[in-house]
Length: 264
Length: 323
Image (cartoon, rainbow over all chains, first blue to last red; front, side):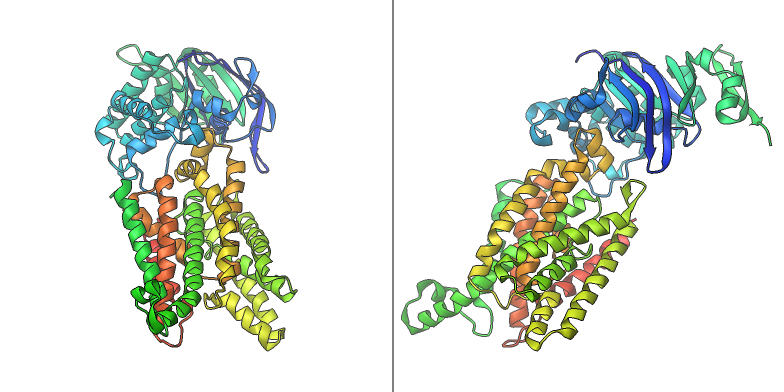
């Protein structure tokens, strides 16, 4: 596995029909860092991930992988390097968890079909790493949210991707599944030195997990930096229109307390 | 839940073979397969004569069934929707209108697949445009769009029907109700190349369809050129539907029923599901045609009535299960 690419967005724009989602966003993601992306609903967080995953085509600005414009790289090549884990996957048809993980091998195989013995062993290994090997033969559409999230993470591992794009990976998880998921995420991120871009509404998660934080508002970056630099009462007020206090808990970890709404 | 390997294909081939034999034997005159095969003696001669009429009909039924089932299976995976079917989405109606208008203009019947294909493309593009909302296809709008397209195309056909001479009127009825009764030996042969091209395109897209059946964003994120793939799959499905309708009129529910049944046997891997749907679709339509000839022999039930009688309850069942 090669080192994750340095990803750079310059004045990036994207829209859904007449509705703008990214309005000239500038950001740099360094190789191997965990970046938490925060912002209100509709601030462009998910769209940024989708543009990097090449699900949504940008309609202005530039997106560079190690200095190369994304548009100049074949889609399959970036699909081998970038894994996208959606917020929710409503599976209409039954699919075995192992087959879902094997889909991560699709960009590596001929004609998107990939289930050679090598693919299978990579997929099973990835499932073991994510503690979901026991679910391999289960129907993924019948798994709990937490199990399914780890199956999709296993798929990113099987994909041998260097960049993981995770859209609200902990939303809707109970505490146990949340802890299980984050343990696996951090462990595998360290083992593989991947870049992780994580969209979340949990400020505390950003404080505890991220190397860097990106705060978005109306399709632009409002603040960025280490969690300590970027998450201040001032920036939180500007991003969320909410008064917040940043305290330290008994162990000296920073915690954000929401105080109340600003303004009328 | 997942049958695989040679046993699966041998079973499927045996069922299709049984249906084909049944299809040739059953009808106004009942034939023993042995008499058809040996052809010896006066009874054998007669049997051969009748078989020479029935064999093209059975071959046409098999091809039409395979085309419709393949188109339905591919559309279901592409749209991530078990209710997708060329009939319900209005593609068949568009194809019938295209073919009917061409025949009205005096175009040779053997070229009518082209006109039906054009009608199918116009209809599926129109319905997809109607169902598009914020960059994605909305399920409710898609089914409503199909309903509207079907209503519109029936109106066109009925309009032509009421103005036409009695001879043309009979042809119009054929497009609307579907029929395998006028199967000449040329028809299955003329249908074959369209079926082969459409089937090859869809079978070649099977792995991409696996990614689509989890979601279009899923396919895009895994490197699929989604716009290009969607175009290929829509065009191939329209080609199969158009060709089937051009030679047999509108026969509903095959594309809905068959992939559903096949999926319950082999799961949703399109590389297995598509070929199995083709074989099962062929078997189903041959069997349904045999039933339509046997029930009220020597009279015939319309084939579309037989498939609808099986298909409508299955549609209701699927609709109730769809969240």
